[in-house]
Image 1 (cartoon, rainbow, N blue to C red):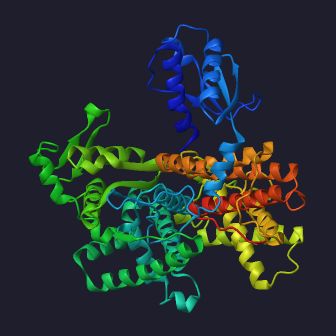
Image 2 (tube, rainbow, N blue to C red):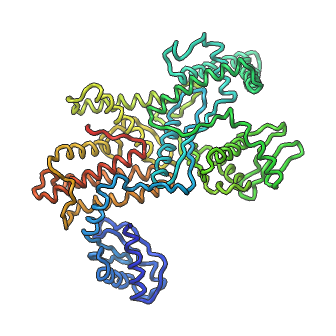
Image 3 (cartoon, rainbow, N blue to C red):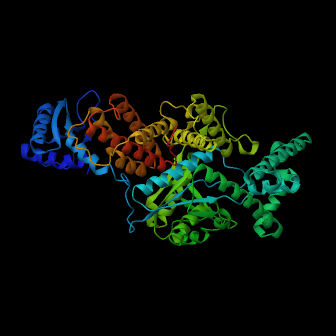
Length: 592
């Protein structure tokens, strides 16, 4: 039970007993640092129903709480704010209840509740994963884990964009320039090899455009008439017709890419429960169009195309079926959403992790599904996120200027190695231990730097800044965790028993108060689909711990009861750091 839940009934009773007024809501906020108190009640809303000045009102309620509620030891009133001081006994009891709870903060899913499906990654099979995919994967995976921790069953999925003209471009370039190259013959990951041919296609395409323009064609004409783009379009038609040779090449090159993706996902630390492929889903949704027409949700134009008019909702008219009977992306997404609920009948909501350039698309998609009458449509959420920029500027896949995800992870590991070696504290480590530590620090830095930012905000990613061992960074938090593990290893006494402490040092109390927030932070992060809330809670916890560490002796404390409590408190902080970081997909090192 939270402090708010403990205090609210007593405050309601106080107002009823003192002023014969019934209230249905009590407003709390965090006590400002310059005032004594653990939680603050806002008095001003009561002035609407109780004729009194705020200070007098606050004093009367405060005195009532001190006299009638054991958890309240004293109070002070500043203007319209009642600052309440909670007894040490309350915090000691709370800590005693959580210190050995390995599931502290986590809620076990109710098997009768509806599940949530979280979609993320969803790459194209014509190039490797890049920095933008890294943010997408880290956000989607972390949000899925946080929702799971909040008490819901979760399915993690992606839809792989494995068809279309962009896929044919890589295939055609491999046919023309590949000389039979394979991942095995080149030593390249399959996704990188295929990506190289996507770049090769673009280079050849530009050269042909230039030649045609030199021959007198306009740029627009040249783009349409370049032989290589016409060949790619012909290949797409053959794919759609089921041509054996094209399908065989398509399957072969896609498998190269899938194998490459699997390696990247493993190194990044993300996984999936289900896979959908656009080659299987691009025809889905066409049958729903007729249902929408029958219900008057869609309307057919004279040319045979089918539309939905959303102008009354502040949007526009959106096509869902072309006049030639072919589907558009919106139709496919409608069909895929419906198919997912068929495949997983316990799904009652979905989270789509997609960049903010698709905000409008998802507004339309969700509204169409709602108008079609699917009750789960009210539980659809677009986890819209900002792009990731580098100091050097934007990335362009077809020009080969993207930041490859594998290269980025290696760069982060190398940066961590350089900084760790400069600090010079790893002499006793084996080469294998060092390599693992560099990876843990480097990837932790990358993930934390990205996840600590509100998803909606654009990020300027600075690799070296992210690996700083001071400030709001992953390595700073990891170092604190490792420091606590060192304390625990050196604690050569039994600290398993409950301490008989009756009073808390101010720093101990502040640390327990920060721990108390963990369950609520998980729920808020799940509700708002924001790993940033969890990341910054963890940073605040670490700052509070370091303040405690500097202010009081731990292993050097002579009073055994205090020493036991401080080691237990340290361990619980470390456990909470590890639990929080696990939800962010970040590992913690036992030594640094």
